[in-house]
Length: 201
Image 1 (cartoon, one colour):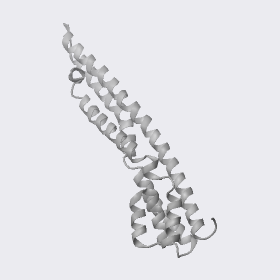
Image 2 (spheres, helix red, strand yellow):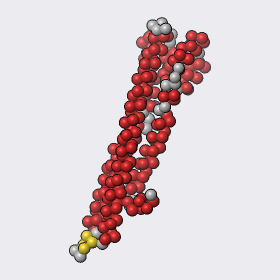
Image 3 (cartoon, one colour):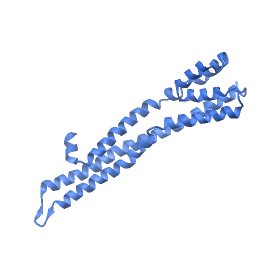
Image 4 (tube, rainbow, N blue to C red):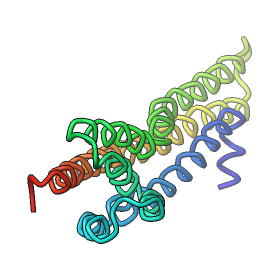
């Protein structure tokens, strides 16, 4: 691998950095976007039971808010449970926007890497072609310089695609996962509002 990087020349270093960032974001998002971390199973039932037993006291709300993004949405709604349905719903929507922003964290960076990596590869290709043409003289070209220019061009093109393709795939995958989690949180929040205001058992 080190030999390939050396053969590809200095233009590959931005791509190496982009690949490290991409892998780090993918691992972090895999951990953070697990359904058990965002929308724990049975949280609505536990929240309703705790609310009916002890009301919306500070300890319960703080513990709920610290449990998960869905818990923060529930806590925001229960803080306004004694107000009208509209006010409770507005407070849930405000907390929901914050939760969605947290779920989408780092995804723009991953999408940027997916878009920029092919361009960085193209930059390396152009630099390699410049070296090839720069090696040409009236008496012919230096084979070593020609070979180096070709390796710079091809390695950077390939590495740019190697970084971009997985980054784009995981960007789309995480976007879809965020959308499904947001829909699930919305459904659970609506159920909580209806239960608190006696519209659902």
